[in-house]
Amino acid sequence: MKCWFTAFFSMPLLFLHIIFLLKGEIIMKKTNIVDWTTITNFVTDAFEGYGIPHDDAVICTDVLLESDKRGIESHGVNRFKPIYLDRIKAGIQSPVTELEIVKNFAATAVVDGHNGMGQVIGYKSMEMAIEKAKKYGMGMVVARNSCHFGIAGYYATMATKAGCIGITGTNARPSIAPTFGVENMLGTNPLTFGMPTDEPFDFVLDCATSITQRGKIEYYARIGKDTPEGMVIGRNGSALTDSVSILDDLNTGKAALTPLGGIGDELAGYKGYGYATVVEILSAALQQGNYLKMLSGIDENGGKMKYHLGHFFIAIDTEAFMGLESFKKTAGNICRDLRNSTKAPGNERIYTAGEKEYEVWLKRKDSGVPINDAVQKELISVRDELGLTKYKFPFED
Image 1 (tube, one colour):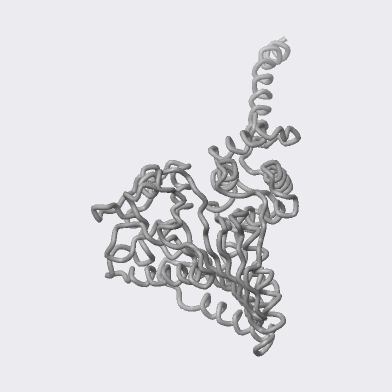
Image 2: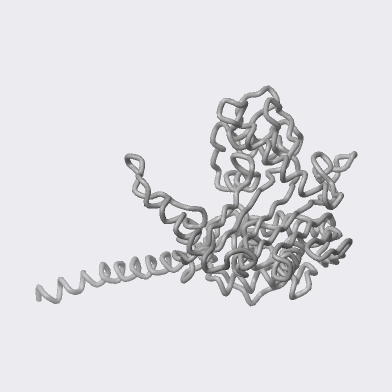
């Protein structure tokens, strides 16, 4: 009798326990991670839905998602809609890229992208530079009238995969103030190097010539985080930290990013300012492209206009010197010696450029790309707008 009584009244508790377990299982299955196949196919289909030809859409997707594969969220799917789709919709970027070769010599070329997709312009330009390098030892291609081309490191890596040293850079809409100035004049202007090594990852240094870049602040704004003090300067010379306000102030000229080294010259901010200027000149002077305030994306009436960005791509074939294998071995030895040098107290590791990104890829390659709440909503809105009903994301109820 006692056993029956206990069992009878235990059943509801057992039932509730099962419900909680099931709910827990459902919650655990709901994730912000989207597998690589799904996100790759979706982004490609969405790009095509906005008028980008299939082969170009594949390139754009590959460049975009390479950012997330390396852990560079500021340039990955976070920028998919606002930087590319919205600009196509606004008519300030062309989905069809008509790449024109303006001037072509043995080892150099000038191309005009006619405001098409920056990723396509970048991919084809570096492809051309590599082809010239394989034939003549070095190749350089410069581009004008382009748009945002994603992470510069993608193109440097194209070169390393071909056994070349890759160097690339791009100007951008004004955001950096010159040292001792407060007006946003220069873009974040990355100066990027890629070098093959005998390790599982190549040496790839891909960073802006400012302390941070606009994409990082966009990311901070999305997740509700303040921008660390010292990265942005206001018109009165003081540091700004409100990420949402900073984005508006950058557009209106009330704020500017600080160059590498920071405000003034005490921490050598003039070095970042100087390198940003080098990139500006190489992205405009060789191809007779736009520069500085001409890249604002705002016309005289305050309306949106095309950006007309410039890029440069350099490939140097290691076989034209002492050979690829010897280069890779020496480069690898240098990186290993640096990592094995004496660590500062409290630090377990020293890294070389490209190592952290490689480790992010090892962690993400079998899972997928993490998508924050704001981007989740954007992906759903793009899917619904284009009628891509075959896609249901794991973060949806």
